[in-house]
Length: 369
Image (cartoon, rainbow, N blue to C red; front, side, top):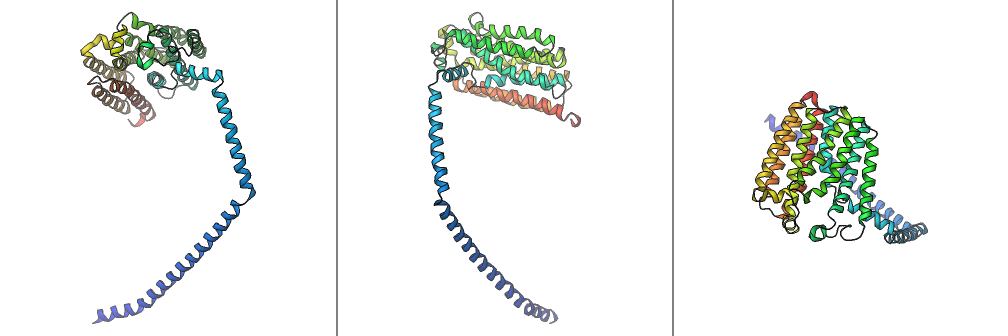
């Protein structure tokens, strides 16, 4: 009975308080509703006032006028021959297709980070990042010059500026020379060893496009041309070359041979008709197997680099991730479909990226690995 009595007393006490609370909430809600209606009315009035204000008309008039002038300016630039030429030169050096820059950049950055044991000297980093852009662009210009009588027979390359006649052979050579000279001027800010090595780099870049006429290993030659940036970068940072330097160089040659063979598989039929040589033609029906062997040798080489450079956890995670991408590339090329072979080629950007991220993180967090 005491419990029942206590409960009844509690209910009698709390009930009026609950009713009062609910009543207060109801009043507050009504007040908020009235306030929101007032705010809404005020906003409507403000918007109505602004919509009729002459300042808005002036702003609208100026905007229409600015848009008209901008359109006229852009149209005039389109018809300007100098702007058209700049656009054609950008196409010539493939600035609209930066995959080549990235494939050249990753081994260069890896060499710089290993040589410096972490962040490289800012000047060296700038010279080689900008130099990669310049030399890849120069390589595209001389490549199109070398292939000027071939590209018109390949559907994928028929509309390139040089082969389509939009720019001249002389212009292509001038673009190549200008870019190469600019890159060489940048190298002059580096040490003597790097300057002498740059001469070999220019020779490799200039000779690569012509090799497909003389032997079946132009992809290896491309690997040497791309790979030479790595020992140059290492020498610029460390003022010496070491066993690790040449392991990185070898890794780049193996890597470039694998991904450029995938690229050559895209143009296999056209190359056969034209008579152009490539590793894809040389390997024949064994192309997938040999690419797999090259990728395996590349992974082994990367492990040796880790051991010689005394890298640890993050680097090997990067190698493991790169191995996954290599397996995926094998899956893409399994049926030799041109569009999938090209996709496999593009996928190598991720291969290089995860390797560099592994090196970067390894030095960044070396104390905990």
